[in-house]
Length: 295
Ligand code: SF4
Ligand code: SF4
Image 1 (cartoon, rainbow, N blue to C red):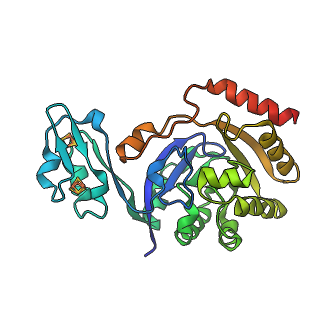
Image 2: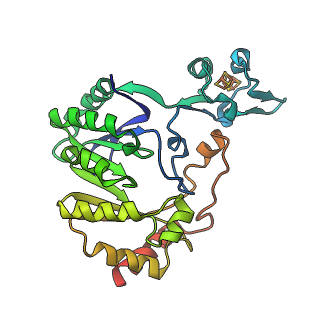
Image 3: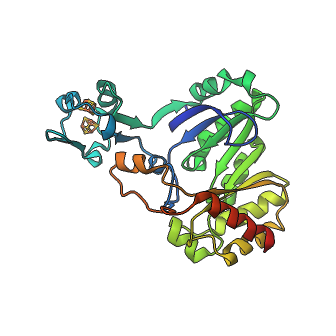
């Protein structure tokens, strides 16, 4: 039976494609975007997260831990979550914590289980809505994705794919029959900068957008904006020039990078990135839009 590691399933989403949608977040990503809003999505494996702010210091979690991951003082509780990798007690650890301060992110689920979840809200989807597969990068688990998308299409559910497109074309090609709309991030056209920010080249992304354009795919383009990093006049102008030859783009959204994911970085024991910290985010996006329109 085909299974995948799913991070979360969110219902009634209105920002993940047209209409009202159920969004399925799959774990795993080929990229390491420095500002990632979902750092818990990057690893393909289930991960423990510890949210100290809700901990009531009952020490129940410590009683079952065989790896010495907990450290208590009178006022603090620290967890070395790096010790939790592949721990056989992850689920128990989550269950024993009554405040949900210990959270297991990622669960192996079957195609049938996810399809059932998606079908629960089919009456709410209306003409435009449906399911969106997001991540991480859902194409990391593309064989599973093919299967579940096929099931959704057979049930008459519209399918959106939120993707970095940072994969070979034959992988994209394998899911084309099942996708109605693609949500695609363009993070940076300058490839050196793209590599510095995400760890990979943008070559696959740009080539795959052109190929999707050639086959008349529907696309919504999203651009994360970071002050003084990827919002220069030249960078924004280059994006407009690239997109002017691309067909099928229904909308372009500029999204300011924020500190939205800070608590999750902390819960994973990772360093919290600092982008747009002192920036007026509305001003940032307005300026990028003007640069795009007037370039
Ligand atoms: S997941 Fe395992 S190693 Fe981590 S705190 Fe829980 S019992 Fe300890
Ligand atoms: S079980 Fe939960 S609330 Fe209790 S000490 Fe552990 S993390 Fe904190």
